[in-house]
Length: 153
Image (cartoon, rainbow, N blue to C red; front, side, top):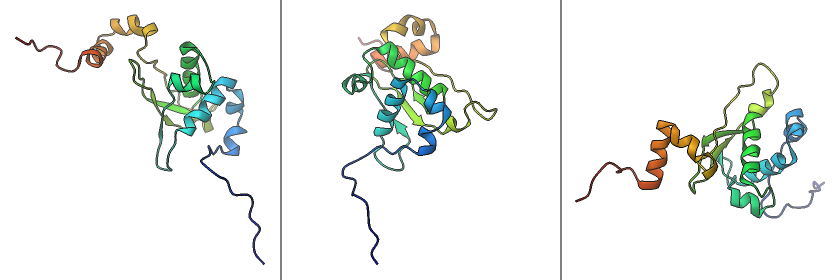
């Protein structure tokens, strides 16, 4: 007897494990963070990819949020609750890069590892970053290139 198969799924889809969406920590996320997380997961192209990106302009296009401040709060919430780990903070027309994380599984337990979220170099944070010597050097490099100290004659 042949097995009856369900309807074929056409096109790409975003898989979300039941244990993830049923977890207390996922339920505790703001609605905007839940939607953002799905769009971060949408960025996965193959099973080996761990780095994901969601830009502010994409978030606006998908109707996730319309404010850069809200978008930063969402990214911070996803990092603090263990769904994403920050790889590169982005800024100055560079996207923030994140790794998908499984830390959420241990949220609220002694095994949970807190990870700090660092906002990208946006106009709002420019004065704060400019005062930090290490980060201001990175800012200068991003704006003017690595050979800032050379003098052309």
